[in-house]
Image 1: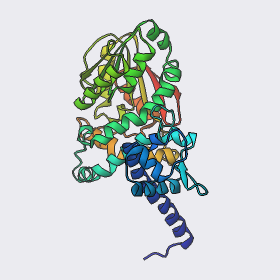
Image 2: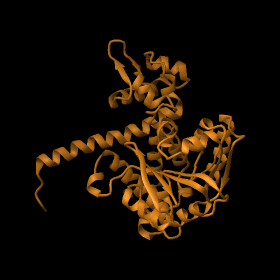
Image 3: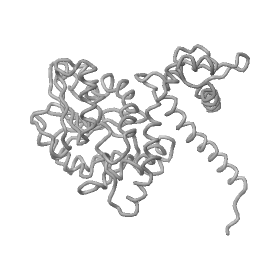
Length: 353
């Protein structure tokens, strides 16, 4: 047996203590989100466990333990003198305000699905058959929508569409848009609310997500100009689209080149394919950072298995990087590929024939 460096071992154990604590805290965030505890504290007023029990109808003893754990994590604030707990404005933005640009509770639902579905992924490792998106637990679908929606709210209309040459003007005048891989429809609905003269169709192969998207469109008051239909990226119907958008889904596809060829066939004159993908550098060593850690983990447990479960099974992964994405686009027959803009979490590409 090799002799360990005790200082390096201590440092590693210190990191692991933090990671185990984060894992436990994640489960408690999901619990608090589901029970409405963060929203009950969103006004910032300090509460005792008894007061929170009165507000929520939950049991005081459980709440004291939950509040103490959240305080230890730094997710709620504890006042020792008053023996009360509260949310700062920043904590409320992260845990209690769904439309906040910093809302993060949905991310923990995605992580919850990773833990639940780990045995299925282990079997995929053995067989190589992959694991389809539809085979995951429901918390993944809900968590994905809630995690990505704040970023779309912050950037899609304000930054991403204006970065596409001439697209904002076309949408303001009235365009036809396909949102492929739309999930619960957050991106589709957001665009429909911003551009009332345009019409939008969201496509996704996952039937339950399409059903949820239709309900969301009704709730948002945009059902008159938004349609949702079940279809894959290689067979969605329609012709002469002004814009085909794919948000954080191209890398999940088994045959992204085939999907790109279909997009090219369906675009109208001067039509644009907007691809939004997780931010990644082209070299592995440049992605070994906190964001890369999350994306590689999600890619291992969700994205790559999804791709390998489909025909071709290219397996781009969530950290494909611009160079590999460019190759997909060029192989699909396009000649114009440009990184239009980016955020710390996403790259936005403009693709044209």
